[in-house]
Amino acid sequence: MQTVYSVQELADRWGLTPQSIRNMELEGKLHRLPDIPGERYAAREVYQLENMGGDVQPLTSYERKQLEDRIRQLEKLIHDYQEKLIELMRIAGNAKTG
Image (cartoon, rainbow, N blue to C red; front, side, top):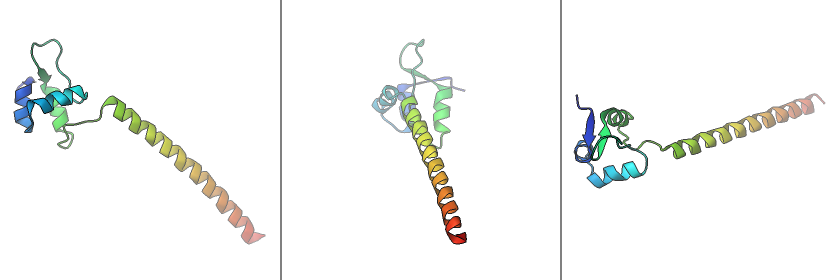
């Protein structure tokens, strides 16, 4: 089993150009092995990217943080609306009995 891939091997494997592979690295979506001469990438990372449903462009840590922050904002908004809805239901219930 192959343990590292060169830029050209990845380009051939994924049907991309070598420059596209380098762009993925610049975007933080793929990481070069620092202690190996040349442009080499760990096979484990390649397989992980391929197992993400064919998406070879995973989220960067910045994009992931943005999405996590947005999820927290939306969860708080839902909670706030639920409290308002409960209060409106309480008021509507009191109006019927009053």
